[in-house]
Each structure stands twice: as structure tokens, then as C-alpha cells.
Image (cartoon, rainbow, N blue to C red; front, side, top):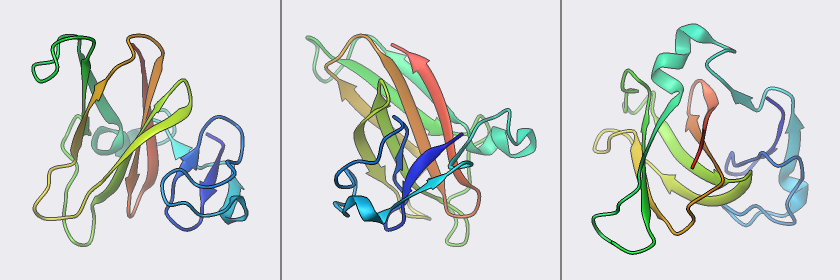
Length: 144
């Protein structure tokens, strides 16, 4: 899948445009380069997909913020991705309708490859992109 990738932090713009500055690290637009294979899907590399494709669970009733909140839980892989110093998930990026929403930065060894958000929005297309330090960026999408 095509995207514009920040050469500083690896953020991928999936809406077809180069941002004025990277929403993840603040780098200027000149830090972006177009890549035809910026993001992989389960269809692209089936043998790696079970450990790299984000698994999204939307919980409509939030236990922390009961009014107007839905929880989004994401784990990386139907088979959990390793979190070793030499092979790990560096970040998980969240988008609504192809617009960047949030980034969770992960470090190896003491964290699991997972993240959660509390959304105010009830509709839209949720996209999750994970960044593996060896196998690149992988995406999963789900309508809210």
C-alpha cells in the first residue's frame, strides 16, 4: 500500500498527502518520502501476517469514561509478536478516516505489543498501523 513516510520517525501518512509537519515527531514536510510499499497487509505477505497484522477490538461501553466513550484495544498479531531487543514493535499509530489520531511508542522486553484508546467518536473508519523494527509497517482497518 502506498504512503508518505517520515524518514525521521517512520510515521506513515495514509490519506494521500504530505503533512506540513509530521504529526508524530514534528519534522517538516521535506522529511517525507513516497513509498509504494509503505504498508503491508495480510494479503501482501501471508506467512508474516499472523504476527504483524493488528487485531482490533472495539468495546462500545467504556469502563473508565462511561458517557460518550468507546474503548479500542489493539494487539499486534493473532499470534503475539515478540518484544525482544532485536525484534519488536516500535510504535502503534491510530487513524480515523485516514487522519492521524494518536501514537503509542513501545520499548522491548517489559511491554506487550498492545495499546488502547478511549474514543469520543462513534463512527468512522479506524485504521491501525504497527511499526516492526524488522518487517516494516502493517495495517488493519475496521468501521466503528
